[in-house]
Length: 94
Image 1 (cartoon, rainbow, N blue to C red):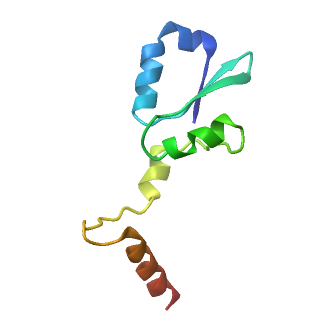
Image 2: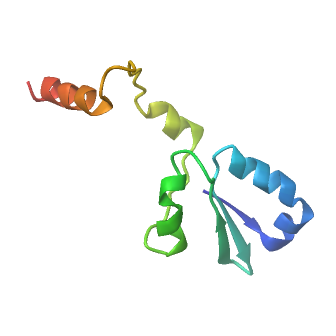
């Protein structure tokens, strides 16, 4: 998650919203204190927006290198993603 000051945000809010639309979470600070967290309205981060807003969880900033290390699975339309995951776990246990 990146951090910007209120002043930086006020100079070009459209650019900040464009970053959020691309999936980035942005903290807005005033005098070093977080006053707002902007989260994407869709995508993987969106499911956590309510929990972040309530202060129950904090999201760690993910770099492109972090995302590159995550496994990617091609899932055929007629196959359950859960079944693929469980099958992979069984193979790892052997």
